Amino acid sequence: MARFKAHAPLIIGIGGTTRIGSSSEKVLRAALAEAEKLGARTLLLAGPDLVLPLYAPEEPTRDLKAQRLITAIRECDGVIIASPGYHGSISGMVKNALDYVEDLRKDERPYLDGRAVGCIACAYGWQATGSVLAALRSIVHALRGWPTPLGIAANSLDELFDEQGACTDKVLAPQLRILAEQVVSFAAKAPAEARAFA
Ligand SMILES: Cc1cc2nc3c(=O)[nH]c(=O)nc-3n(C[C@H](O)[C@H](O)[C@H](O)COP(=O)(O)O)c2cc1C
Image 1 (cartoon, protein in one colour):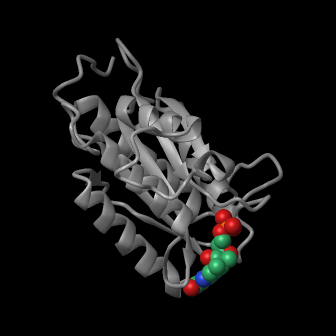
Image 2 (cartoon, helix red, strand yellow; image 1 turned 90 degrees about the vertical axis):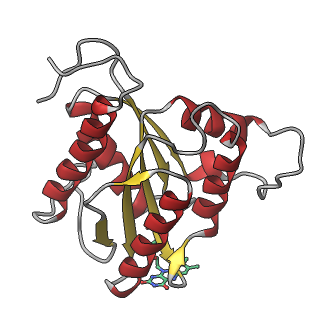
């Protein structure tokens, strides 16, 4: 297990839906739990955290939830995004949240620059997961992030978790470990950060 000598990297999770029992939120939580096992600090922004005004670039102020999201993205060292498939692409809620990254355009480290981003797509059946994953990766690329080599497609029709939220699926569980490892290890290698594995 990787441990950090100095500051543990902050990995944030963005995604899920407003639905109680959201499968994409469960997958996101499980991925963040894997990142924690690797020594990362994590922050989940899901469901109600992402019910934000429609992103308006010309607005001079942001509401408190939007400020929290922007600050979290600014301070993070890596990101994991989980979106449901809505009509063949990512949900409007997740896209709107990602549009707020525009507020980081003038930062020293603009947008998602220098951060690895793990992408997860959840849908009923497999067909939409492919287009959702491709859309997520394309958005991350546009935001100057580094999509991890492994992206995850999860079928929400399957029983994937136990009551404690642990992943019980033999295919998904190791994928979540690998995705978390790719995000965390990239954060540890980031040249701007003075941290190293023990
Ligand atoms: C508005 C809407 C559109 C959807 N469109 C699709 C779709 O195009 N393809 C698909 O496989 N599932 C689709 N679904 C099913 C969702 O992808 C699936 O329920 C997903 O697990 C929802 O995420 P959640 O469990 O986190 O709420 C749609 C669901 C909703 C509510």
